[in-house]
Each structure stands twice: as structure tokens, then as C-alpha cells.
Image (cartoon, rainbow, N blue to C red; front, side, top):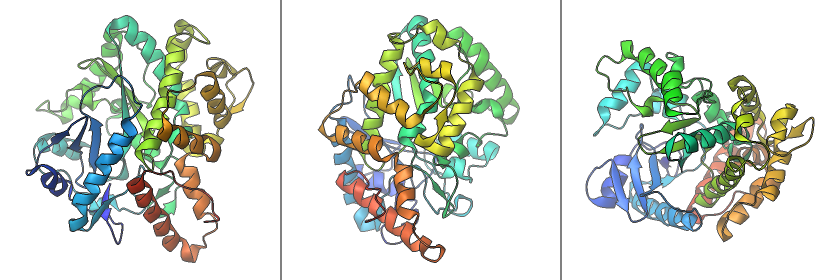
Length: 399
């Protein structure tokens, strides 16, 4: 998020940032291995790898270098980058501004149909991880594995416990509003957990065709009849041969973002390789079972307790019940992620002290109602410093 460096209020100047970086307003700016692009709203800038990467080690520093460049360009504008998945006190009904340049017809179509002023459109940031497949066999195995891990990811990545200036009651408020942001056309997001579709034809019949039929009366020009309309927590991008995971909140710095991705990939590789159970057993798990676990981790993060013993066995956990924190500690030992120096330290912080959302709450919990706003601003100012310096956020309330 781009915010004012004094007030920390949202600052809708992504177009001016891109212009400062490359000399003109563009949707995409390639800067070596990392590119910048606009998003739906004018106070958000996206950093992404310019091309698919064979591994994630070393990428944290490259993203960190781009954060430094962006902050340098924002300095004369009185701006700075703010991490985490939601702005803590933004009023999107008053402050949201859509990207007004190229591709605006698509953004305006979304706004006309769904009213993008709410938190679920105008105030959220996430990390997208695209994992490749080739053909139905690989797609089916990968999709089965991805569906299983989605409910566990908020326990590592939840970073949005504050909304409208208050503790929301959900450790992952972004996912909570995201799952309801397209309620006018429920087929868009479904139940966040994708349906049991394990070939391209099954996916088209179960997801794309019902989705396109549902949106058609509201989209007479067909602007949104595309793969990108699908807003489940993981979406199949057959056009690029990948499954894109979308349930991961932005963290406090790129090293933490990459740490979450590395841990995720290690577990997915084990599931696809049938380390604990074969893919047919994985495919049999219903949307309803996974959705119930997801709702718990959205609310409670790593403290959520999973009581579905058959689900736990899919990850090699032989117990009637387990906290998601303990599941992840088991998984990191059983499937060690391919980390580097920066990401290893960040992952240790998450496993020891909880996701960023938990650490934010820990810092706020002693603040009186009278001093809550001031303490909130201090915490999020510190988060801008964490992002600028590439360090993890200390959740100790003793600071």
C-alpha cells in the first residue's frame, strides 16, 4: 500500500510512482527479474517476478531492493510503502480510487457489478503464488494438494486483524471480506475452497461455465468472461499452465512473504509425491470439510484446533485433534522448506511467535481504549520500517 509518510492514510498515487520509475504511466514496468504493475485501486502497487522462476531462494533480496527503489521515488511525494493485508483504518467507501488509465474498462465493469468501494475490493493486499502443471495428470495431482493446504495457510500468513480502526475479531480480516466481496454473483468466489475438479474438462464444467453463465446478464459486453473472474482461494490458469494460490496475506517484508511460500511449496511437493496418502484419497475431501477448517483459521489463525482426524492423517498427523500451529511445526520438520538466510529467520519468527496478525494483536492488547488509535499508528509506522529495512516485526508487547 502507498500511504502518506506522516498520517499513514492511503495515498492514491500508484500512477505517479510508476511514472517516476520509468518516465510514463504504464500498467507494467519490467525492472530485471522483478516487475511493477498497477492494481484495481490507485493506492496499491504490485511487485512480481518478470518471468517464472525455477526456485525462490534469493528472491527476497531482489524484492527488498525494489521496495527501496519505490520508497525512494515516493519520498518527494510524501509517501511510503506500508505492508500487511489491509489498511487498518482506511474507509474504502470514501477513500477508494480506481486505477483510471489503461484497462479501466475492466475495473469499471467490476465496480459497476460489485461496487468496489468496500473492504473486499478496495482495501486488501495478498501474495499470489503460481505453481506450474502440464496436462491433466499433473493438474489433478497439484489441484488435489492445493485444495488440502488452503485452510492451513492463514495460520502462517494472517496479517489483517484490524479493520475500520478496530480489532475485527478475525485474525485474517482480508480473507473474511474477500470471501463475501462478490456475493451478488456467488459463483465468482464459491466457498473459496475450489470444487473437486481434477481435469480441465471437469474444471470448465464445474467452475467456469456456471460462473460465465451467472455473470452474463450483468456483463453484456463480455469483458469479464475470462479465467481472471474466478476468485476462489486457488484458481486454475490454464492459459499459463499454473494454479494460482491467493489466500496468503502480505507480510511485513519480502523475506517473510517468501518464507511462507517456501514452507507452502515444500508441503505441496510432499502431497503431490504421496508422502502420506495417495492422490485419490486427497481428491475425496469435500469442499464443506475444507471450508469449515478455513473459517476457523480465518478467525483464530494458528490457534485454531482441527478436530477432523482423517484430514490430519493427510499430513501425517496421527491425532484426534491438533492446533494448526502444531500442524505447521510438524510439517516444517517433516518437509523442510528450501529457505535461504533471510527467509529462514523470518519463518522461525512465524513458527515461534505466530503470524503477523497475532504479533500485531500482542502489541496492541495492553493499549487502553483512550490510547488505542495512537498505539495503532505506532505499530503500523513500525511496520513501514520493517518493510523498508527488510526485518521481521517483533510482536513482544514489552517494546
